[in-house]
Amino acid sequence: MSETKKKTTWMIYGANGYTGAIAAERAKALGQEPILAGRNAQAITQLGQKLGLATRTFSLSDRAQTVAALRDVSAVLHCAGPFSATAMPMLEACIEAKTHYLDITGEVSVFEEIYAAHDRLVRAGISAIPGVGFDVVPTDCLAAMLKARLPEADSLRLAWKSSHAKLSPGTAKTMIESLPGGAVVRRDGALVSVAPGSLVEEFPFSEKRSAPAVILGLGDVSSAFRSTGIRNIEGYIGLPKTQIKSMRMGPTAQRVLGTHTVQHWLKRAADKWIKGPTAQERASARMSVVGEARQGSRRVVMRMTTPEGYAFTADAAVAATIRVAHGEVKPGAHAPSTAFGAEFAQGLDGVKVETVCA
Image 1 (tube, rainbow, N blue to C red):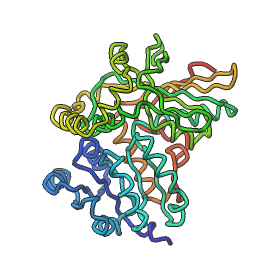
Image 2 (image 1 turned 180 degrees about the horizontal axis):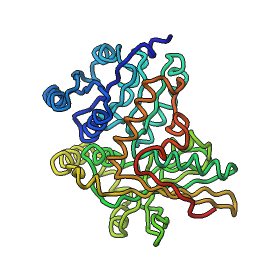
Image 3 (image 1 turned 90 degrees about the vertical axis):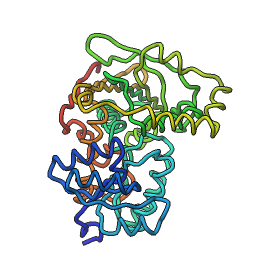
């Protein structure tokens, strides 16, 4: 029996953050007893007392401390972003501790770094699955379904739209970091940057009518490439036309947004003013995800509806971590659909899939 299979507990790191706390509550509701961890001792202790769960406090900046905290843990659900700064320190510690790794990132660079570590993960006997929330679980599962319907597809477009527009502080800061680089798409297998707001398309987010969506650097250009092998991929987010227009910016604006001073100010503003949707808003909102696969004149379009994004993330991430902790996923780096199958999203509460065009 491997070392990872002997471990009996799992962990949520960043459990005191907006999404981490929702995941902790979801785990408790399912009768799970994960260890709640993070670097803020007071906040982690308070959450642990509230939920009746064990806690640990450590900082990812201390490699030895992090490895020690993971030694007896079968899997860690990493929820402490921005993942561009935190994912690799956690992954490196997981490799040393032989602990399975999952996170809720949507950052293309993070997917690419984790996928590049595949061989090391196999040698360590552990799995790593970035993006086990929204995005990319619904979009990745939809991409895998489309690939099965149209195996020869050479282009893929994925888009999602929320019935509300509220972000968590962590998501907002991740988006702030991505502004200077523009959007990322995949062209002939390579990652290519395009100007912010430069591509706008209509998608059938509902049965009644289509709505506009703007190109964004979604993690799917990395995850869906890994799960489907389709060489041309674009990711869009549905927004009102006024917001889409405001996203268009030139090189000078991008350079200004990339300066340390502006980034620091915007992130402080996000922490101060952005609170994320309330529990009532999470319960009532819905997400619509659309995928379109093409090969020449052939086209397949599918639509998935899910619960609100943060609620879905908690459900999907906890379900994924439980399965990984139980040894259900082979070692290596995975997209959600390669780890759990294209039907994974459909097995979660409140998810519906339909074919729009075949």
